[in-house]
Image (cartoon, rainbow, N blue to C red):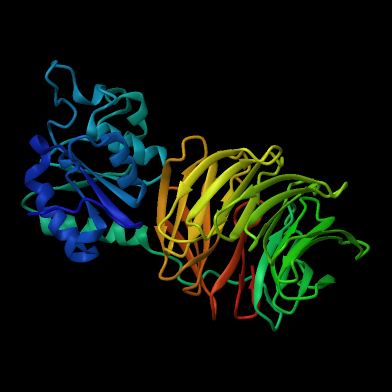
Length: 446
């Protein structure tokens, strides 16, 4: 029987040794495929094609799953390689790599003990797998396979269950399409930018509007300094402006040759990054007004992001690329390509991870240093917004498909919220426990 060789996020990975568990692995695959669909099951990693990096293939496959089922038979622990040493002692052993990767990524691992096998103790396992011994195991026998498999299916269904409609703590009704959203570092203020040309500052606790800043045309993006003192906004009037929240005064204004599509502030509010149809991204000194760096793309720059320390600038463009630059010199550090326009970018606070979203209906997480893709997630429409949680462990996405979703860094979907129209912006609270969303339906929600 042909087995799946890739899974979308939310899938199930079956880890087993052929000489130990192949007789039940095939039956279990068929049972899980009947319930969850064959495309959701990954099995038979040892059919990896010639020349491919098996560790990379395993990491990608497990990274797209939410559950790993580890089949453990009587010979699982003692299976030896050609050198006579236990295969689990080899850091490159497939089974060890599979389970270790899942444990390291906080993916649910369910040990399934077959043919009377016992659960290995921590002292019998290599240190990276010692945590497996603490996982609650399911016993599966040939004579009771149907009942045991049903119990496993129930456990997996429970693990894959999503909250289809997380509770909304607050809804702000602006009456116009909301194109931008930002939250300060304390989680006290929420800033929106809308098609009516205004940036507004809201108190999260009360929902009261605290300040409003006008532009000459519709706004496309907003940002706020970590301390909530400064708000930046950019829009179709070809300008990006920085405002003082307390006084309502315009601090400074920067001009592009065409409409401004994106803005980002560093934590202190001393640097402003802008993106434009012109098609450039620029970094400005908010105090002096001097342009510090300029990055050029081959088509419009749809998204920008800065690390809190202002060291790195990320850009996403309609030229199908996302790039990371030195925000001081403008030197390009990382380049990644997608299958369509890149419409959203985000950096984790340390600058080690880059998140992108695009017209190809996908969002991805990349390692900045290497440019390697770490996770992939999909929507039913273009991805217009991405955000990484402060600890870098969660990814939030907003899409044309009217949903905002939260994912584990592995690519497993954790929660989903629905708006009445496309979701244009997403932002995490400082503790990563709440998500703010903005939508073309005229609302922002927490």
